[in-house]
Every structure is written in structure tokens, then in C-alpha cells.
Amino acid sequence: MAENININKPAPFIESAGITLTERLMPFLNPANATDTASYATQVANQNALQQQALQQQLSSAGLGQATFDPTTGGLSGVGQGTGIGAFEPFLSQAGTDAAAAENLTGPGAYKDFMSPYQQEVIDTSLAGLQRERDIARQQIGNNAFQVGAFGGGRQGAQEGEFDAMTAMNKAQLEATLRAQGFQNAQTSAQQAFGNQQTLSANQQGLAQLAPQLAQQQAMNLGQLGQTQQLQNQAILDAQRDAARDAAFEEQQRVGFTGQQLTGLIGGYPASAGYQTTTSPGNSPLQNILGVAGIGGGIYGALNNQ
Image (cartoon, rainbow, N blue to C red; front, side, top):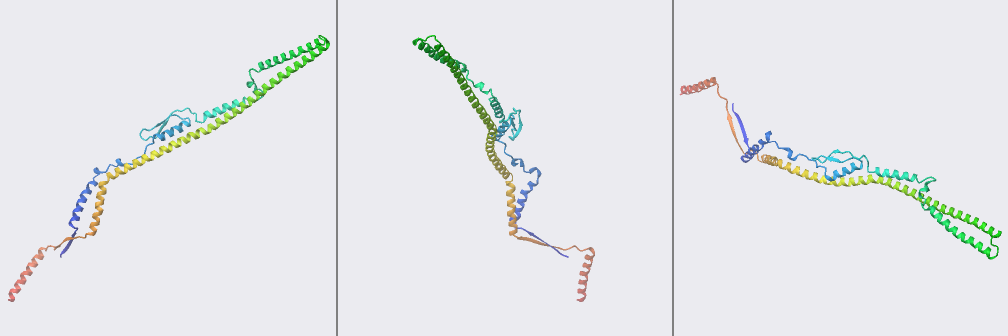
């Protein structure tokens, strides 16, 4: 029984290309030739100086100490011992001092610290001036009595007594007026000082609220600038990684592209050459004997017929 085997082969140039492509692909199967991925591993941009400064300002504002940063990543690695005093605390402390000073300016004796140290000298000088004026006027009473011949009389004595009483009353009124003016001035000054201390205390409280806000805003501004710079650095690292990866796989991509093109060629070019073989199974010894006998019998029959 015959068996036919048909073998179809691609075009010679396609077969040659396939052999070449296979030879190029085989080295990639060797683990020793594996691509080193470290050259294009993903990297994260380090924290930069602006971000570190922003972080340091926030730490200082919270009363913490000097920050230390990892030299490799730039990230925070430690915080030193600080004062424990936040940015707002000095203003609050001063506000409390001003408020206490304002409290000391209240009460019935608050004016005393604002009395003029020359108050008594002013009073004494004013009284002495009044006394001189009154002495001159009193002398005039005697002169008038002498002119009318009543010098040393009872009428002169009565006038001088009344005059002296009036002088004493005027001096008392003058002293009282001067002391009242001094008291009023001191009281006004005390009230002004009280108001000033209250204003200072309120201002310090406002600064206590404003200082952290300003520090936070400044830190945010620095942080935003630092983040912009970090994004730029990250973009550079990503571009470098992509370039390294493309370089590492350039050969594989080129071979893969060639394989895709070859696949298309194989589909477009069917087998153009082939050959066919026919095989028959060998005869057994018995079949050989029978065959020889058959041939012999045939020859013998032919001879008898003749």
C-alpha cells in the first residue's frame, strides 16, 4: 500500500528571513542575557530646599527645633529639641502683661502714679505770690487809716481782721483749686494710660492670632514653589527613565517589528515550492516466494500454449 507525503515550503526568501529572526530571538531566552531594569527603574524626585525651608518654618512656628533631612531623598528624618514656645506665645504673654498693667490703673489710688512731682512746689509758689499781693493790699488799709487820722484805731483793726480772713480763705481756695487741677490731670492721665494698655493688650492678642497665620501662609508659598520644582524634577526623571527603557528594549522592539512584518509576508505568500514522496511497504518472504512462483507459473503456461 502506497503512502503519499506532501511537504509545502515557504518562499526561499521568507524561509531565510525566518531562520535569521529565530537566530536573533534565541539569545533572549538565555537568563544570562536578561535586561537590567535598574537603569530605568521608577524614581521619585527628592524634596528640594524650598520644601525643606517651608517645613522648617512650620516646625519653628510650633516651637520645635532644627529639622534634619535624609541626604538621599531629602525627606524629613528628625527634629531637634526646640524652645517649646509657639510663634504666637510671646504675643500672648505680652498681652497678659499689658492687661495686668491696665488692671493696676484702676481703683481709687490709680491717679497717684500720675501726680506731678512738682505739685507741692506749684502750690507753695502760688500761695506765696498770693500772700505778697495780699500783704501789699493790707498795707494800703493802714495808709488809708493814717491819712484820715484813724491809724491804729478800732476801725483799722476791724478792716485788717476782715482782710486777713479773706486772705486766708483765698489762699485755701487757691490751694484747693490747684490740688483739684492736679488730681484731675492725674486722673485723666491714668485713664489714658489704662486705655493705652488695653489697646496694647488687644494689639498683642491680634498679633498672637496673626503671627501663625503669616507663618503658615509663608510656609505654604514656599511649599508651593518647592512642589512646582519637585514636579519639574519628577518630569525630568520620568523622561530619563523612558529614554533608558527605550534604549534597553530597542533591539527587542526592532526584532518584534521584524517578526510582525514577516508574519504578514507569510500570510501573503503561500507555499511556492514542494515535493511529493510515495512509499510502499516491503514484501514478506512468503509474498516473495508466491510472487516468484506466480511469475514462474506464468512463464510455464505461456510455453505450453506455444
